[in-house]
Image 1: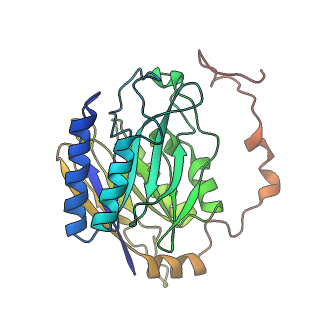
Image 2: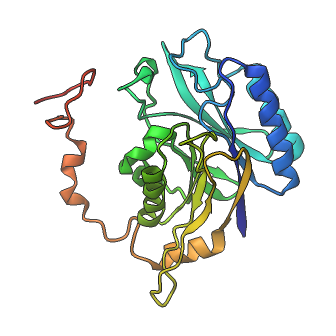
Image 3: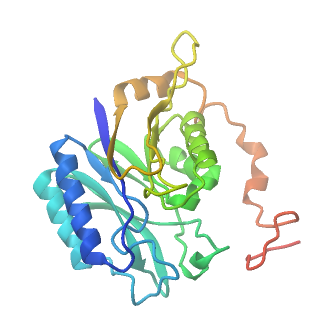
Length: 284
């Protein structure tokens, strides 16, 4: 069984929701014609990754545009990771909705690792990482800065994710795509990322967890790596049978971890050289 992810590499237009909706619908139709199972959008695509974002400019969970995409997903029998700034409790949230092929919202995930060193400090952070069942495949979501922290992917793996989908909007991609390849390897799961095109941006990508064969010979785990400038839809096919077989025999993921030694991972103290202005510090 193959799981085909259509990855949109395109830049949304800030504060132009109607034009961004046109781009999403066009991409949905094209991806469906090419037998994709799900369309992955870059970060905050409905609203544009428009910072500083206000509560008034963000959209509600029941927004008509979200309902419209659910209807298109159902009509064209394709899933979508739909992204936008949404209204949190008091502030905007950076959100992804996983919608299945019947137009049902399976999961709402809000970015946990908001970029508090920049304008996202005025965005309400999510509180947990989530996994959902998409036609028998366990999907997790990380959004942009989440992927800088290995714990994000690790928690999703522990919650049963087989594939992690990553809406993204940033530049300087080389070390970031290398990190995604590593996240796939160390957690024995697939990873796909959608990033807007542009100079020093783009590089939408997908990685398999399979890094060696049954004889121990290394194999390339890169499924897809786009350039930075090209705008369009790129396709990544994950061989779920091969991935599941690999996960059942290899020694990464949640196999031989020595978790009793991990207590410091939950220590909230921040010490030099990691002290930054604007941090919430819990100790010195």
